[in-house]
Length: 275
Image (tube, rainbow, N blue to C red; front, side, top):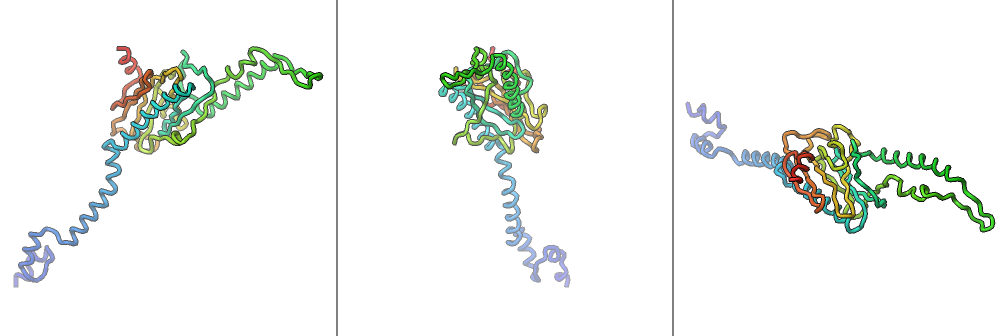
């Protein structure tokens, strides 16, 4: 019989009754096939959704909003505590933290830096200062033993008295519940950054793994003018060029930060501030 070898029934793999072939053709999928399709779709979406939320801006908006809030909080702390503060950004990792110093005369000055020092370079600067100042201490004279009053009289001079004021600022991390950890990562990094005390744009490509950049806050109510460029991370130190970067721009007198899409240069922002 021709029905037994019907091409339709062989292709669809149905039973012996010809009518079942037509019913299967109208249904499209069996129950088992539908379950398989739904399971595969669920697995695909479970992997894609976390990335989709980042690409559509939800997580990015949260990270950038937190950074803008931290800039304002640093400004407020400097004014309220009457101390100097700085935000330190580790460019490649996207980590940043707040530091302060007891030195009350931190100035931006006219001599702009090619790059902000690493932690090791700042430590070397402190050690060099102590070594050089030891020469001035020797010139001031030796200790004098006052036998009558059983005491040692140290040599004095205006220079020795001003030692701690002349010392380069020692910065320490602010460690409390609010500032325990900060990060733009793992999907974002600081592509580049330029503030008033920088001679040129600070980029992690130029200064590699240890690259840091500072933003200063002063008790007189001034946040250093800065432009920070934040980009998507493709790999640890590789920028995802397909994604649009962001610019965080500070208002020095209000201590606030605005977030713009795209790269806005520091000089361009200065020109806009003047107009």
